[in-house]
Amino acid sequence: MNSPINPRIRVRDAVPSDVPEFVEIYEAAFGPGVMDRLMYPGGMSQDAKEKFSTGFAGYLLSPEGASAANAKSRSFDDYLKVAELLPDDNGNGGKKVVAFAKWHIRREPQPEEVWNVQREATAESLGEGANPEVHNQFIGGITRKRIEWTKGDPYVVLGLLATHPNYGRLGAATSLIRWGVEIMDREGLPGWLESSAAGWKIYKKFGFEDVDVLDLDISKWNPTREDGDDWGENIAVEFAGPLRPGMHRVAMMRRPPKQ
Image 1: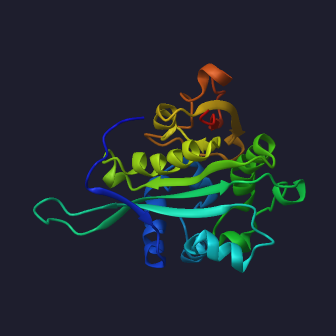
Image 2: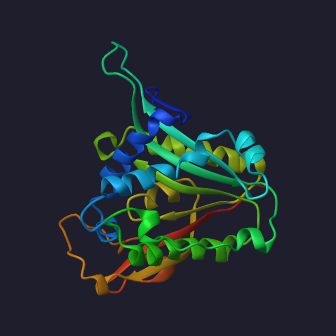
């Protein structure tokens, strides 16, 4: 994808002081969506926010430092990147983190005892007010799909991308995706991600292709259909067919390695 880069958007490594902004961005981007409303029925409690924040700790070490500190348990390198909006030419506006992305890069094949590991979330691990059943069927279902497809092969995976909706259409998401795609092409690795309705079109522009879907029956949790809700009816339709009523769809997408 050769779209121009917004000169006011800078991609950089995340630092610990960015983490509170990640919680704010995540809530703004995903909180209104049906799956987060089901995973956090009353919104994210302070305890849930703190548990969410601790998940970034390993990404805030350099890959080399993290590997040295815990080499036996690590099978890939983690990168946490932010897209920062810079002041305009007249100096108006301060620096503002408007998006972030979690990337995983596995450069060597791994044995099954390393890659075939699944952990269920609990009320304690997710934080007060969270619904572990929804989380384990949704996030756990996505994880199981990824394991099924990638097994122990080398890859580049986009684990999470969130852009604050107040700063959409500035190229922040594009810049963060491009960062990972450049690694894929440089190292000849396939790329993987899971896409909701919001990101599906931009991922297609970067060469990601539908390979599977997670169609989850959410009707059993009696969700309320709010204005603007998109449960994935319009993604991967050519690949997987129409989405049945009461279901929510996420597309599993792969970008072939550059030859």
